[in-house]
Image (cartoon, rainbow, N blue to C red):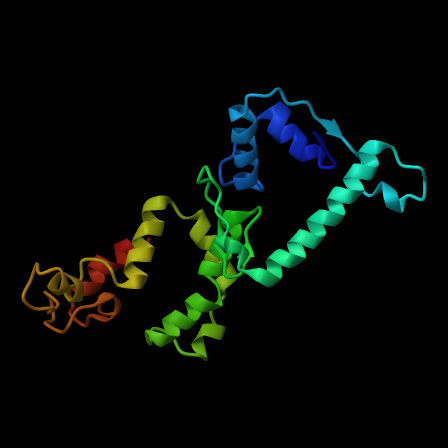
Length: 215
């Protein structure tokens, strides 16, 4: 088999690299590895430098000529595919996971791109819709500094922050929803208790307990 992708040849035939989601093109590499292993024939490969038809050096040998033809046919097929139906409908037989973000397939840096999208403008707009921040105050938050500080915090602190900011922790509002109590009253002042109330409770006993938790 001839191919102008030297890295792809090495991954499929020589290195048999890990195909976890962290590696680029993990779904296609995995499918190719499985196909090679399951076929009853012995595979041999040959690396062909690509785009030799653009070098101006002729005649091309058979490997180069076939590579030029294959490249042209691939471009035609890709164009037809984009016009006929959604490429996301294509499935891989061995069910290796492919990750799509809206209309784009994620090839590499998947974790970074997903987190960037999850914590991006759509998330801040959700906080606006929940009336936790306003259109004005969302521009006053240093989201980059907040992200860096979050990464430097230990796991238990990060989990606690996520639960507290989202409101899904053991405050009166939630324990009523979980059918653990019949009312959402603050045990100190009696006002409805949510996560925001934790910081604002006017009871004299609240602050001495709150200050050590901030350290």
